[in-house]
Image (cartoon, rainbow, N blue to C red; front, side):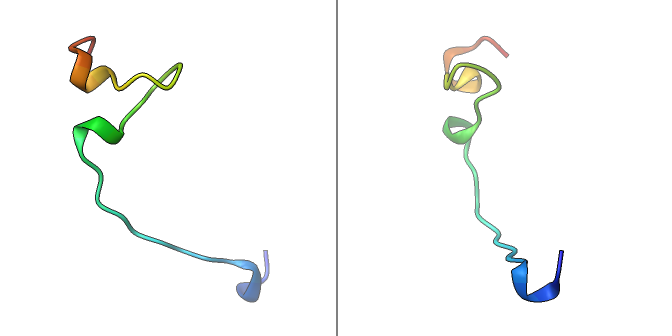
Length: 32
């Protein structure tokens, strides 16, 4: 990958943003 083809971004995530399967926020549903 060349340097001009690379983009790095940082964002803040909350528990509702995490999904490990099927688009479900397992932290909010209590499955994790």
